[in-house]
Length: 204
Image 1 (cartoon, rainbow, N blue to C red):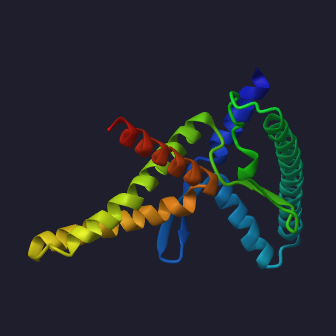
Image 2: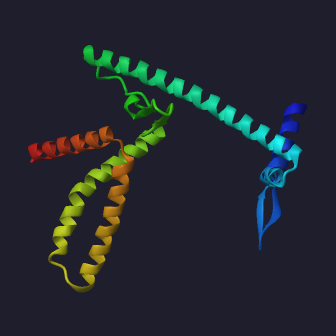
Image 3: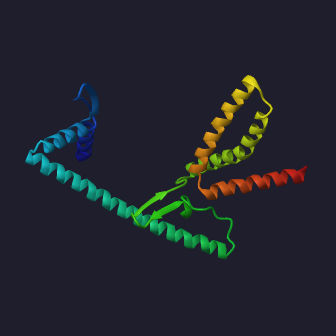
């Protein structure tokens, strides 16, 4: 407990704000950043101790980052491989009542050249629900924007200007959603919308 309290004190002090001068400006930066900046400045001035210390610190950070990235990449490769096999098994046996994994293996993107991995999609249940709402909005825009652009042809004056502004905002939002959403989630949302339309027409 004493050791944990000491760690807390050290970190509190390391991230305590301190005012420094930079040219004609005064900046408030964390103590750790101010110390590192002082070490770097002294290293540039040729002070050997600061040069050795700075090189050591940079080397240790780069090594730690490399090892962390290596572990993350290996974990991502294993995760993607195992879940692809499991989803293929489900498809072979016609299993459709089990939920997809989060993140979905299709959303785990591996770059074998750089040895990096990233998740291009939801990584938690909460994020998945958010992405699904975004996908529904994106689908609605596929109908709403063309419809509003058709209305625009028959508007004049202030009404036309306001509608043009609204369309521009929707277009910008639609472009952002189109970029953020994974293709499979957009396709799934489009399929759901088509099914709902068909059901409504059938009821009618």
